[in-house]
Image (tube, rainbow, N blue to C red; front, side, top):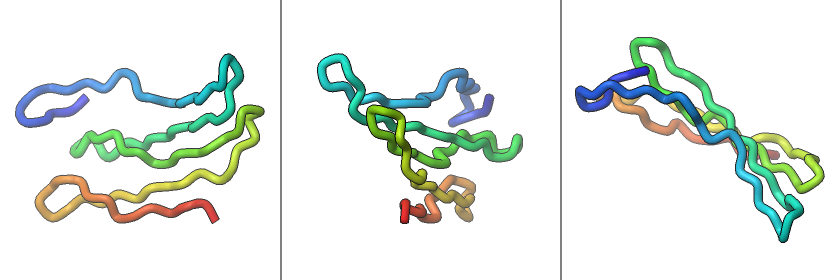
Length: 83
């Protein structure tokens, strides 16, 4: 729960996985992970995305870093790709 532009916002559901199919068989999956900021700045931030093949063999996740900008808005501090 949080406030944006004076309006109360509630996030009850987040996208957790995207599955790409060929006909009926999955060929690639993307697992999506989030992290919460503090209660005083209640944002849900993208933390990592992990790519898997159709048989659930997954690689290292690509992670994202965030920092609070001077004005109080969020700004990306970069990302760390899989090595």
